[in-house]
Length: 455
Image 1 (tube, helix red, strand yellow):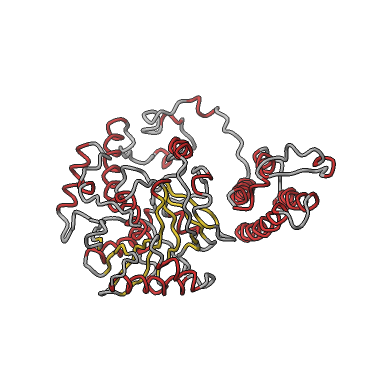
Image 2: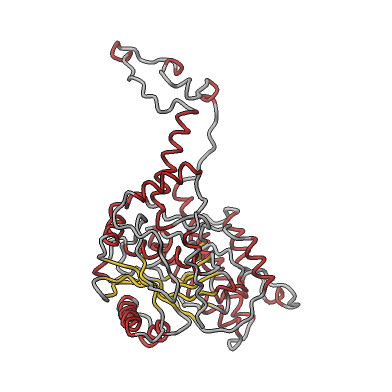
């Protein structure tokens, strides 16, 4: 069933993001650009080609710029209580920013090519039309090539499935060079990104970031959706982080569990979209805000004043009092600052170890087979008679926060107790035993990955 809304009128509404004077500057800036189509109409009963510009967001260089995910078809009634609970936690997680300013040159390529008509972005679904089938087949071929571990039949089934939609990057007339396949769950306010890939010959041009920004604006304007969820493989995590995704999942599990399919070895990631951000004009907005902030700072401080360099040392003066340095007093310095004790910093290596251990705990907690191990065992009479050295993910996390592990090896010893204890207490045919095996395999894989990063 097609649940896409016709929101062409909503697309013309003003986004109240900035003070009015900044909005006017953004409007003036856009009006001076050539060949700009001010309105993107994503409605299904109209032309689905998106022609817009002005977004410069960092892209990912890896040849595997993809997310390995999948999706099952479910028919489960919406639990309004869960949705209400989730809405209260909305935007608590890391919101989508896409602020990699040091890669603007690369991102400018995709924006310029879109302005010149070299590439375009089209929303497509299996509606039986010849053009739609050509684009979907092009997407299927790219996904099958870029995601070699996924069964080809499985990719084809999801791309052509009528519950799924795709956003394609198209060159020439109908040549697909990349895209995203997604499934919206509007009643639960999230969309699942199922596949994401750019052809290896077209990478490092900013297509991936531009594609994601188009998807964000399209999804937000078409559905009542504020979140993306996706399972990313190790190669795709970097790309998704740059697009505002995080491994900190703020959506309640009952909202999404059973609606998206797990991918073994993948990492669940979430993106929370900021309601009033126009992602296709993100850099224009940031540039204007940056200039306004500079003006405000100039009114409040003298930090913009450049003083002449000190010349007293040319006269063989060995030292001077700090207050004699021009501008230092004006900057707020006072003699007490020389006697202030700075907090003792942890060694950089120790900080990195703690970060890795926390990441490993978080990855295990988000794994589909972690549910038996999230909390200490309770309500089982003989458990602690058999298991004398219990361990669970909450206790493991608390130990990391308390600084009880000085090496990754010490951390791994306690993590291993979770799996060994489970197999000691439970029979091999039980779901608990099987969960322990799967989570252990996943933990060892992630442990080796983080260990290689540390080296």
